[in-house]
Amino acid sequence: MKDPLSNFTSRSVFFIAITEFGMALAFNFVMAFMPFYILKISPYGQKETILWTGAIMGTSAVFAALTSTFWGGMTARFSPKLLFLRAIIGHGIVYLLMGFTENLYLLMALRIAQGCLGGVSTIALILLSHLSSRESLPRDMSLFQNSITAGHLIGPPVGAYLATAIGYRAPFVFAGALIAVVTWFCWRNVPDVPLQKKAARSAGRKRGGIFSGWALCMAAVFNLTFLPSILPQVLQEFDWVGKDAVNMAGFIMMAYSVAAIAGNFPISTFATRVGLRRAIAAACLGGAFCQALLSIVPGVWSFTLVRMAQVFFIAAILPMTISVFARSAGGGEIGFLNSARFAGNAMGPLLATSILAYSNLLILYLGIAGTTVALFLVFLRVVRPSDGPA
Image 1 (cartoon, rainbow, N blue to C red):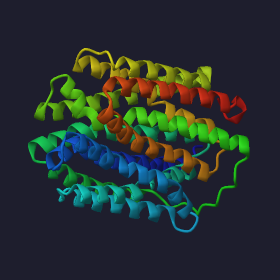
Image 2 (tube, helix red, strand yellow; image 1 turned 90 degrees about the horizontal axis):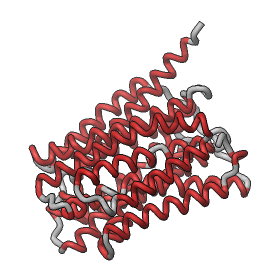
Image 3 (spheres, one colour; image 1 turned 180 degrees about the horizontal axis):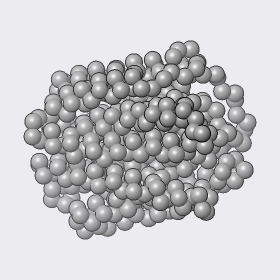
Image 4 (tube, one colour; image 1 turned 45 degrees about the vertical axis):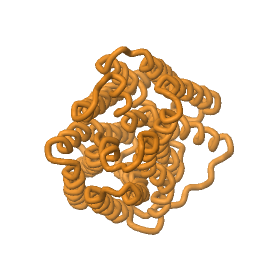
């Protein structure tokens, strides 16, 4: 007879995923047009504005990476569910305030506040790990990741449409309202879990593996997130400007988000047959090859197709790499690995805009491809098959 608790557990996991979907959707309402919004309100020249764009888009992820472990540690003192809900509400307030400022310094300050709240997704992982059975945890982790990706898929075109049809303020207001809705769903449908224990310190070799896994996860997220901040310049290379460029930016982000969801399932199935190490190798090398191809595509449509192929491979690296350590890692280590998501989100726009400001797209594309391969080789050398189900 089926355990009645399993339905409740599945329901709880589902609403954690829904909450993360809503958070990702709200975030991507504004990310699709944020570079264009900064261009509109910036009083500076082109180079300074590019640097401001990278700083404003990337600074939130920097602080999220710095606070991810902090939020995990706070669950040893305070209710994980209540911490999670309060941070989500804070996000909604910040979104509303962002919609009513045209000052770059204030916008930067709000993005920093948003980043300090952003590490709370570590608590979502803690809730998920406690509410999932050992057997269903990999499946639930996949659902969690795909919910975030789905938010990345739907958010950009909706945000771009709202910005062009109603005005730049509308997506911020919609984002705040959406946060209120998912907060209510989470409060009603997700139970609390016990206070967490502090994780024991890892042995030296294991720490080296965790660090190499963190670096590979960061590189994967970097590959996924570097593009939006430089899309105005990329599209300008293909003679797309103005509102047409805004809408095309939303379409490109939507298209490669579809590719991310599409790639996650077959590559994960491939991993069950050949092992995680070989699957991670295929994903890294395939993604790096497509990244290099971006430097020679002749038009915006071929650029979109190659970008989709690249993301098809790259998106599976993060969940597969975490899976290597999932059974043996403590909560603090999972929080540390999760911080790679935010570090990649930060490094993507910051490095992409900085390199582009002083170099060109060719150097940027080839540099990302080479770095991805190099970090994979380090991971392959440091992490042994005995460290996890690899």
